[in-house]
Length: 519
Image 1 (cartoon, rainbow, N blue to C red):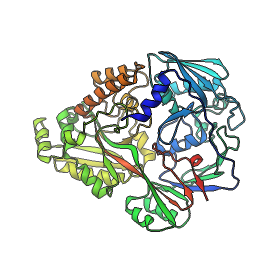
Image 2 (cartoon, one colour):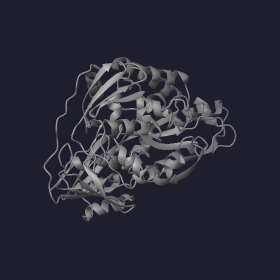
Image 3 (cartoon, rainbow, N blue to C red):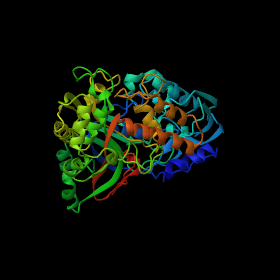
Image 4 (tube, rainbow, N blue to C red):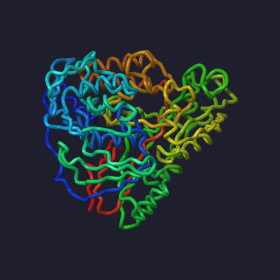
């Protein structure tokens, strides 16, 4: 059952006003926490890019209009209430008395500025379904959508509000170094690749943070990260290495905390006639070749050997909890491991001797990502595909694979959908590029199917959640047949902390010091 997102959306579409309930705790002098992350953030300016370490920092420094809770439910943020005025108009009542960290008052002008700024940034997807935003007064705005759009409030959980005056004066480049938001923390110090220190905002509108000072240390090596915890250098670590789980569990001074992840590790295949790392015509323009690759990958072996059993094979592109998931449809059952069948498909497509291409992958973004890439090379060799590996740190990876994807033929990355709705993923990853503003912006395989595009358009044009679900399920059926991308597995989020740290992992994997405590 798709309870959380559908329930939240029914409230919005019915036009019910959602009221704020204050949370937070008394400001506690002296409490500090050190967190070991897998990598340093790439950015501190939320319109500069998106990746996990950066996202974690954004939500400490800034606030959205609509807040996404740890369980993916939605509630008031900088907007204390909202209502649907008609099928294409939403009215948001903004919270009064909120200030940015520099003392500037938060007003409707900042919301209007942020929406327009996002439209001209590298993140136009954030406002793709906003046609117009109007200031009614200092604490009220109206947003019009191009067509009826049921999930606008949920989308706004991704849009972090900027200080118009400060951002304009500071400039985009310096915003990465001198962020200014309304969030629970503000930047104290950032020595890149060494540490990033945040200090609590005592005047935070939702209540002062319990933890006054938070230091984030990038520790890319998993063994070093575990050692830092065990020796007391850090209090919490992200992505405990699967091989270290039992070791940490056996020490009563520490605890291991896990939860299923939304992060789906996927393989994007180039569908252009000419592909950067393939000589001649690109074989992956043929669906039979894409199916052959899918059938050659032993996902169970990757889970057992590489992931130590701490992963869940993906059945579709989004989890069963999400709008757009088709009950009873399983990618693994449609395309089970079958080397002989894979070879036959390649032969039928005109490639009996296989071909050579390069896989681009990271070595510090996903759990055991480099080892997964190596396993994929071994598996595809069984069907005569010579897979060269181009493995790099994530700091280089995102720019390298950026659309228009001039360098890549085959990409291993990950995607999660914290909105609980497949539409944002399908619009970003599978919608035909350069056809519609804000859509297809990360379609790295250049996949194009007008029927799929039309279904996303229909889903994004109805106020009816049930109908939206039906449209997106139909889109899922097309994608599962076309195979523009191979879903591998959902990671298990694994954290470790010393005893005395209160840590409840979020579904979206955003570590939040505001939601933690330490004794």
